[in-house]
Length: 230
Image (cartoon, rainbow, N blue to C red; front, side, top):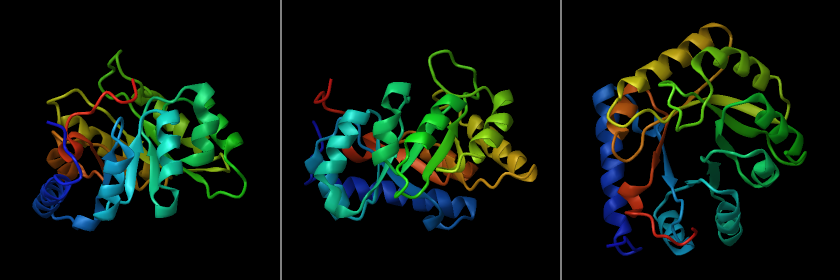
């Protein structure tokens, strides 16, 4: 059964409780972790209900769907994250309307985002996606290519490189620690990264304990995705 606005408070409280418990176990402050509601294929009404309950960050996988929601909820002052695989022909829409992009994995995409970011808007927050397990089915830069990509993206004036993102194989939480180690190594070399975007509904505890600063939560909040935008 799909979750509706009437079910959302309980689910949101449960997710927040999980984040708080994981943060406490790791000796971290709960407010050091941002809950990003992964809202792909969810109706605007459900996002409105989540916003009314205090959720401020929403993540969309498809530019057209995300733009429709941004327009519908523009008066709420929400923060919008693009968390899908970004194609070159969609960079303008994302650069003009989103606040964050989590899946940058090559310099060409970053350059297009920089060129297309409006001059009146603040720099676009960027996370580099890392394909830690070298999975053919997933995007992301190879670990060995990340240092050079960090250097190049950091020089782009309309972007603000914030950190790293990963989508590790299910059931293999050790990759979260690898991403944290990579960020620490990059910072030791002069980078100034403050964001680890990792962890979803099934493994948020492991991600928080490994240092996640953003967890992307969909199913635990909203239930199964309806097929509204296929």
